[in-house]
Length: 251
Image 1 (spheres, one colour):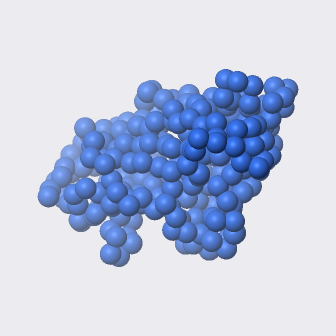
Image 2 (tube, helix red, strand yellow; image 1 turned 30 degrees about the vertical axis):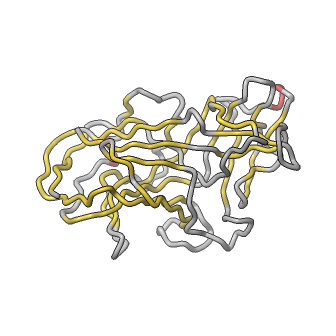
């Protein structure tokens, strides 16, 4: 189908942070809302699943577009420096590229906090990133820095994997969401510096008749994080990502 898209995008509402995580179970304390969840946004656009070609409607490779999803939830954030006119063509997927190094803080309301520090992980759980000591807790101004270096316990596994992320475009859910780790050239080769997410659109979009408009990207962080004990189950030793939602719409 033909779909009008923007050639001059006037506004972008903050993007979702996008990670590979572990689903909550009855043994974990999950669905906690962070107090800070910042990530660098590089690209948003549409993808051709056959060729893999990316067609960005937003692109900023400077690394300066960092958004705190909690601070700007529901508020417009101008990202005019990276807005661009997409190329004509037919695309069957949504994609977005972010850093693989979010900055976070938060707690579960019951004395379990994300811990200050710099962490890396490759198996869905950030070991040692939680604490019951409020003096050691990460804060909005002093967040924890967390980098994902691989999947399934291996730095050599760059995906694709199925992330704990849901996405929709103009209210229609996407399907088959996948995530891969890529480098600065968007190639799955070390050192990984970015996440590339892509998902199937419910209906392919043909970019042909462009007009001025507004690109709106909204998100849901209400079930974004959880805590667990070292051996599994309820506890406050480790931190993990839970469900995150994202919606792209064009007005």
